[in-house]
Amino acid sequence: MPITRAQAARMIDHTMLAAYATEVDIRELCEEALEHGFASVTINPVWVPFCAKKLAGTDVGVDACIAFPLGANSAGMKVEEARDAVRAGATEIDMVLNVGALKSGYVKFVEREIAAVVKAVKGIPVKVILECSYLSEDEKIAACLMSQRAGAAYVKTSTGFGDGGATVEDVALMKQTVGDELGIKAAGGIRTLGDVIAMVQAGATRIGTSAGLRILEDADE
Image 1 (spheres, rainbow, N blue to C red):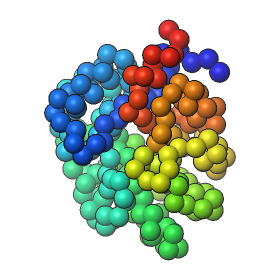
Image 2: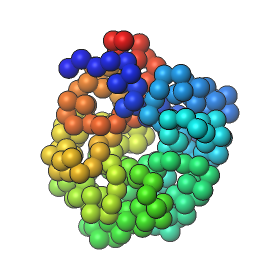
Image 3: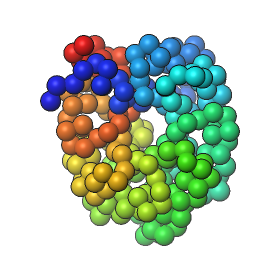
Image 4: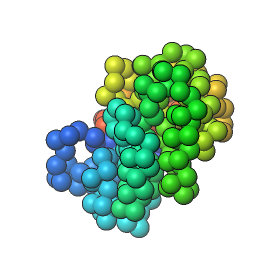
């Protein structure tokens, strides 16, 4: 499956989520996203105002990660964190679902939590991070379906901070479950153009990675 540099760039959320990221790092992230045409910069919420100012009037989105990386915040805190990010200029939200609640069988609670965040940000796309490495196949399917019912725009494989990252098998299962109703973001451990192509062939429509520049070096013009 051939993919051009521009096509690859428009699928990539250019990511910097390290706790030690400095203003210099985030400025460079924004400048690289602008230069190469990445879909968004994916950042911790504290950097949203800075990135929104740097990227104002451009096609590069500002993607804030909520309840990151554990998803163990209360539902109310997730709602307020998402609202605050949007007020500060976020154009997309990546939210970690409550993995422990899902594994405890509290499916309705988790679905209501997702729906509350979706409602709170009023049309801003929400990507629900499943953290697939901790879930059974049935739990992955359930998480996809509840995200779909709750009005999310995407389901996402992982934070990149868990026990495992994106796999072709998980992306294919997510695609089989949600079809074309939701986008699918593959994130965690994606480092090469070959990784991107494999994920896209399995059904991914967005790629989260901190290796975007390296990936573009291997893509055709």
